[in-house]
Amino acid sequence: MSDSPALLPVILCGGTGTRLWPLSRASYPKQYWALADNADETLLQLTHRRLEGLPGLGSPLLICNEDHRFVVAEQMRQIGVEPESILLEPMGRNTAPAVCVAALRATARGDDPLLLVLAADHVIRQPEAFRQAIAAGIPSAIEGRLVTFGIVPTAPETGYGYIESAEPLRSDRPVPIARFVEKPDRADAEQFLASGRFTWNSGMFLFRASAMLAELERLSPEVVSCCRSAIEHDTPDLQFLRLDREAFAKCPSVALDVAVMERTPLGAVLPLQAGWSDVGSWGALWESAERDRDGNVLRGRVISQGSRNCYLRSEHRLLVGLGVENLVVVETDDAVLVAHRDRSQQVKAVVQELESTGASEGRAHRRIYRPWGHYDGVVEGRRWQVKRLMVKAGAALSLQMHHHRAEHWVVVSGTALVEKNGVEELVGENQSTYIPLGAQHRLTNPGKIPVELIEVQSGPYLGEDDIVRFEDAYGRSTAFARHQAV
Image 1 (cartoon, one colour):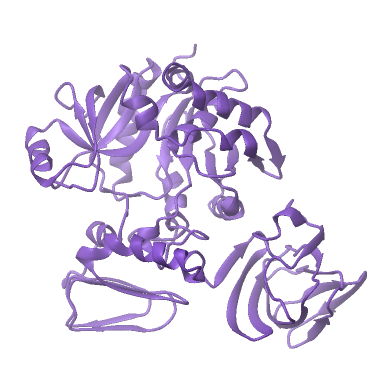
Image 2 (tube, helix red, strand yellow):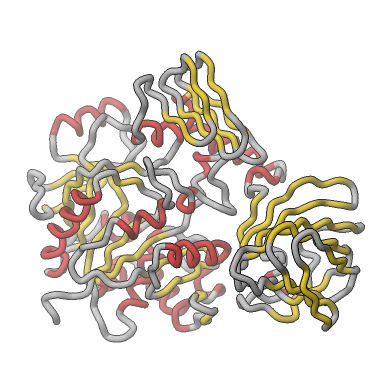
């Protein structure tokens, strides 16, 4: 066995981040947004960026929900990263199955790399300190230890789980774990902080793939059995690997901590001080962000006068804060959140209420991302609606037809190649074309700049599942049309 195995990042991209509603939603969760200080890149992109310079670093293996696969691929392409694989989970099953399929995939060719398991939605403000901690953990991981990174507490936080070390913590190497503790009450959290042996559970890990698989086989064999079947019956889909739905559905939904780390004698913890935050709420994001002299965090088109200790964010419209204190105000295309900072954890309950009533704002934004670009819902009425589409250079919509609606396309920027019942035409700026009900049609962008167009739909039924695909460059079929319109 090599003394210098490759270091394979495993980036877990699941989760919906509902406490960061209305920005983070199931259709486009927080890991795909730029939330860190002075960063134009998303949390997912920064997760990989901060690894640059680590010894033996290989291409990442990403695990995501199949609905987000094109977002993940595009965000990796934007930073020039070609993943080793993008594994698609048909449904969420927590972190133990995700890590298990990653380990099975990593060892499939007979290799035994180090797996660095990271969440895609963390903020780390000191990446160099983070890399130093990873490097300090590598020797122990090579020897077969299952290393986790514990965040050095800055307060008696009751919202995190804790890890107690069996020995005094050291920054140069991991020490054995005594126990994991679920979210404590305030008194226990204060005792933990005073002892100096407790760290927050970050959910980041480093270990040999074979070492984790062996412990999973010993402690949670059903997880391994189901994941092995899901891998053996997977389906290649462009650059993605789609896990078998039936096999993965049988897998227990269990966290890696519960399945292995709380029961293994191989666990070790290394303290991490790197400006970490899991951005689990708007209040946590305010805490981790750089603030102005009045304690405010201002993002987007925001004017603040006399406001203090607020998080004010605008995605579209001008937002003005006058003399307010300790508020979170977040404006998006279809919803505005106004909350006291101390109650920002309760946003999740609002999302649950929206979902229970079937309100679209609970799950999706007006802007919906597709592999060819995106579309925005502009306005709708009875039997009609208007959308704005952006099609990337070289991209194309599927060849499709609709049973219940006709469409009128007006190009406002770029040049579109429109195929309609086998006949092609170029449609330039300020030109339009009409797609009758039942016509087979497709729009392609043959140019070097994006095509932007206005789409007017009319008909008795305008649901996104009214689509029949005949050809598609992105491997989508009519079977998935309900969730992958246009």
